[in-house]
Amino acid sequence: MKKQIIISALLMISIICFFGFSANNFEYQNKGGQSNDKGIGPIKEVKLGKIDQRLVDKGNDIYNNKCSACHNIDDVNLAPPLRGITKGLSPVFIMNYLMNTTEMQKKDPYVKKLIQDWKKVPMMKDQHLKENEARAVLEFLRSIEK
Image 1: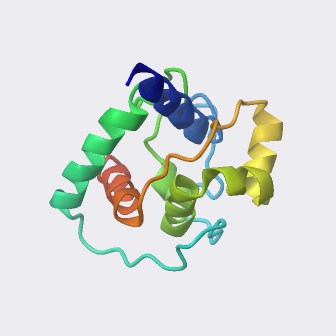
Image 2 (image 1 turned 120 degrees about the horizontal axis):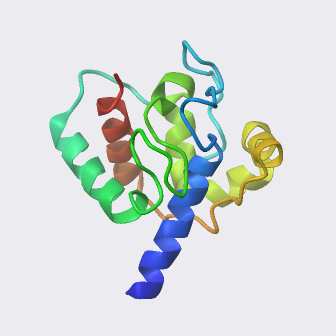
């Protein structure tokens, strides 16, 4: 159990390490509007509507169990804060990254450039989130935007 928590923490550190250590000194790929980059993975389209509180709650639970050890919402921890990520990166990109981390670290030009530019340690391996879990995390991330 302890090993699983440590691995999860390292993985979540890496997700946000791609996006900088501080919301104040990092601009997401397309600040002011979402990027068209869909990343690499099984998700081709995400239909967004009103915030679904049921998904937010599920995503918050996943965040608390897998992400919060390294990622705060607004403050730098071991990894950058999460607020703002859905304004700069497409929902498809975010879900594909959550579900297909390793391949995106190896092949996605944006992720590779961030790793190089920021000299960050990438996530150690995939979180193995199912599509419905990645969608819940996305909904949670949408709910924390200002």
